[in-house]
Amino acid sequence: MSLLVVGLSHRSAPVSVLERASLSADAQAKLLQDTLASEPAVEAAVLATCNRIELYADVDKFHAGVAELSTLLGQHSGVGLDELTPYLYVHYEDRAVHHLFSVACGLDSMVVGEGQILGQIKDGLARGQELHTAGRLLNDLFQQALRVGKRAHSETGIDRAGQSLVTFGLQQLSDGAQVADWAKGKRALVIGAGSMSSLAAATIARAGVAEIAVANRTLSRAERLAEILGSAGTGVVARAVPMEEVRGELNDADLVISCTGATGLVLTAEDVAEAAEGRRVALLDLAMPRDIDAAVHRIPGVRIVDIESLADASADAPMAADVDAVRAIVSDEVAAFGAAQRAAHITPTVVALRTMAAGVVAGEIARLDGRLPDLDDKQRAEITQTVRRVVDKLLHAPTVRVKQLASEPGGAGYADALRELFDLDPQTVAAVSRADLTELTDLKTADLMITDVDVKNRGQA
Image (tube, rainbow, N blue to C red):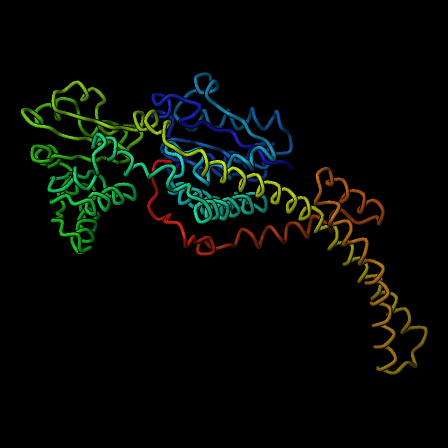
């Protein structure tokens, strides 16, 4: 079996396509289930953010796998396969590992170096575990990606190479001024109370805005966020408002930040034009598909920054030295992951060999008991221990060596050779693998916590 990823992102597809290609939680679950039901795949996981949809699978056939995964993405993403195909990319085996590790480090994000993608990778793994679609390979892959991302953020200055989308967007709106100076005293409207909106609200509160109105379809969530903001010690006055009052709040807002899961526009050009008449309003749209009509940029006094303009602006961010350092980390980790996977591939065969050897020892000791019934317990124990030591010593060197050889490139055939030489029962080897897989699918999400990087605020990576 081999790792395959098929997907699209802001690097391969225009915003107009990404806006339409989206996966709800239910759609992701159905995609995973259908992927496992397809012939080429035995494991599957989805990484879905506002700016990327990627389907990871362990497949036994490359071409059939690409065709099947592409078809499934077309069926579930809302964009037909014919239209989607030109924007899809495919990575296989080590290149697929390299891609996910790069994504985890923020190298493939719209704003290079942002760390919020780690939370989304963690969500993707948790979803695969919950639905029992992620097995040994994808559990190992996604957990290692989280560790690699954490390492990149702790060992390099990649965080300086690209700020989070919120900070970067505010910098674009401030036209080169310090965000704190630009934001001080402003009245803000935050639409949405999810993780990205919460991050945005906390950021502008620290920057010094005077007032924040939080609007959300579920008012209790808006009230909770307003309570947190008001008690954070920044001095901001925060309050919650129902979504139906957004247009009225817009009349008093100097800064509007919107990030909802709505499929249509939250603010039309007419809404903004009416509220902005005779004054200046700054808009930051972090949603995909967009929440705010792109036509508002034609309205006098209105400045808007959205996902598309952020992608263009972030392309010129200084990053060379830190990016090079992270790329070196990724290369090292990809090599180490490949070696570990190749070594793990032979482990069930080695376990099966030692199980067979233990059975031979037990059988011979039982036969000895029949031939020498007068042995006392001490003698029998000594003979048993001696036979076990002989078998262990004979197996030690070859099993250690075969693990070393299997971890090297091209070492996949050693497991087959070992099974052939010792005439091992394939069903026994398969049983060992299934036992390991059962343990893996019982992993708890708590085991995946990342402490050094804030992954709780899941942004638009």
